Image (cartoon, rainbow, N blue to C red; front, top):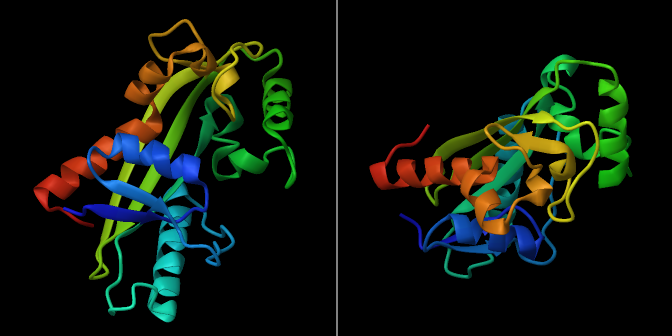
Length: 204
């Protein structure tokens, strides 16, 4: 069981989010000067594994820890899959409306694509890949089922949160409290699965 993990991201907010989900494990963003590879995978898992492996190789090349040790490295990849769009945006969720698209641009394109459609089923997906110091790969995933609202609601959250209504809820993710979001989110479910595997000593 690791006491600390390096996240394949330079975003301290994302690191804090995962630290809150991974009960008692310190999560730190990757060091300054590290970079992430192009996401060339065809699935969330492939992209998460690609990022984790690449950052691990940078640690090995730079000997950052100074004593030859390699840290635990974790990466995530997530997005939204819409049934009526054959699973799109999927791995292209963050750039659905273009490489420089904003969250608003992506949401507006999604609503345009779903205009007039009765089937608004969707799900948030998160894949986590954790690589042990010895190079073993541990994979965990989490899914939050729901549907797409007719228009955005709520002032909190980001990405597609303003138009995603979780299953058994009447409010969008952006209208939920932070506590409720962290309890049911796809990232929370992936983190719980990862913790279960770490406690059980399983890897894949």
